[in-house]
Length: 594
Image 1 (cartoon, rainbow, N blue to C red):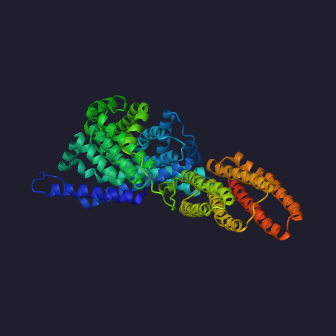
Image 2: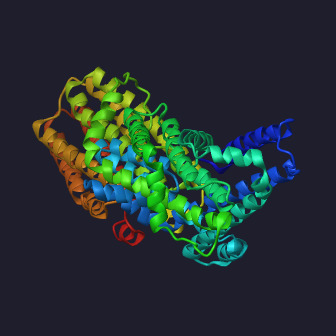
């Protein structure tokens, strides 16, 4: 989710909480001797620190996404049928993207594309929860003293770096520094609350699991960032305001609240998206229910293997130990849940299908994109991969148009020609959506490689739309001429056109597959087919020359024009397929095959 909306939600919720505490403190029954707190100053520090924290998380995430780049896309492209490796993939992708909801959106795209099944996708979703704990582990270091030096070094690397690697590294370093500095500002802001009785009573109430889970879920749902919830919990723990059980309850609530993002993302989407979101919700709620009665045991277990500070006492010791313990509990909870549920992904998938059954989609001429999701624009390498999937979706319609061409001409069927026209309108609308998506993508920062891919995909989209236009316009016009001519092509000419039709159709299909999968070998096969297409055209010309000597000149001339127009249309379609294939190949290869 965009940083501004998250920040507004966080500030509104935090402001509401502070107002409630201030009102409580102002009551006549407030404790005698309660400190005189400057609520305005404290609120400014809290909001400012939270703003720095969230902005730092955004910078850190952008740096990770940019540094991962092609590797992230390759990991996603190799999603495996092995559920364990699928979970590892989900954990890695979520750690990089800093968003389990974006991982869920990606999973939906792969389900729709037929790359993985719903059961296989659940493994990835389980891993996504583990990956979301990566942020809490970083935050728990809480090395606030080096926050500003990290900002300075990161900014220097971003501005003075000459390579993408140094710029992305600087962005990560600066983001992490802002996270630590923001935590320091929030900690300073909360300093007066350490001796404020009503607030301490409220924090003590967090030890009750129901209250802690509710607060964590509501805050995370409004902010749509479990990282923000965990960050605040760790800051409060570092200030000695909450203990480990309260931190665990907040972490449980954060796991439930983070499902809100996935649910919102699934609204109005295909049934696959709704099922993926339902799987996310089901898993997270079941996981919390499984653990909620064992919070004391979990806390004790975490204390045993987490770093300790026996040289300290009282609040100072808790402040030194509890932040890391909360982060470890958050990770352990999600890892254990993934291990428990992973063997039952098929069962979970069956339950989700029962909860979200198939629904009939109304037939309509107007088509909608299947893979484009603007939440992915901030991850260019993945967003461009989704564009490839969408081009495959458009390609299915173009190939359907192509398969209707010959039967429509042979049968002289107005109904078939009308179906071709309607499919052409669908392609036009889908292509416009892709181009609009790519224009939005261009506003984001792209690497040199991503800029090349962007240009190639723009070209492939234009060529697909041009192919559909040739079929829906020129073939329909040719069909009208055929219906007006009371004569059919000779058997020899039908054989030549049929062979050329088959070869062009194969080239078109291969070109589309090459674009979707970035298959250079398939793209080269399309270019090599040029010799066969020329041979078919030459055969048609030789046949026409021989026929001109035998048949009536006037009738033969009309037939000649129609038949050669069909040859030229097929040749243009092959030319478009060739241009599509060239977008997959390096410039040196396309130059040699110009």
